[in-house]
Length: 109
Ligand code: HEC
Image 1 (cartoon, helix red, strand yellow):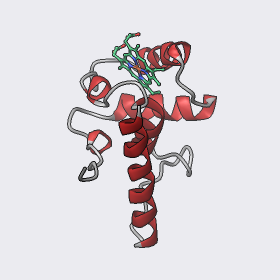
Image 2: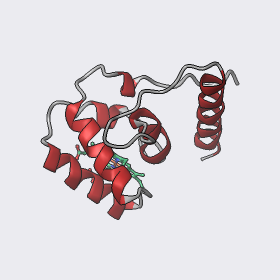
Image 3: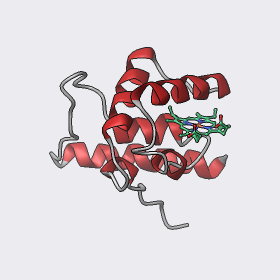
């Protein structure tokens, strides 16, 4: 639990650094504020590693992704409707090895 929190904190710090150095995160046309990788890191990796999601890239239809995210919400995932839809679309478009699957470096312990 503590480890996960540290990981999330590091993600937030890393994102802060990226934004201050001017490396803007990619934006989708549908929702300018939506960042797929960040959503995966903050909303999905709470319970399991992204690999569990990334293993399924290219194997689910858009509707299957929507259903999966709904099931995750029943498991306890906290994600808004718009964000869930944007994430479903992003996962549907993404293929194995996509950038969104890159693992954010963990701090030295
Ligand atoms: C509250 C805990 C929790 C959160 C948060 C969570 N999951 Fe899961 N996830 C699970 C559990 C438990 C399983 C295994 C049981 C199952 O598949 O329903 C799972 C399994 C999966 C699987 C593998 C099974 C399949 O249907 O392919 C995928 C993909 C997945 N989650 C995607 C996501 C995504 C995307 C998010 C972020 C929106 C997310 N999860 C957030 C608990 C969670």
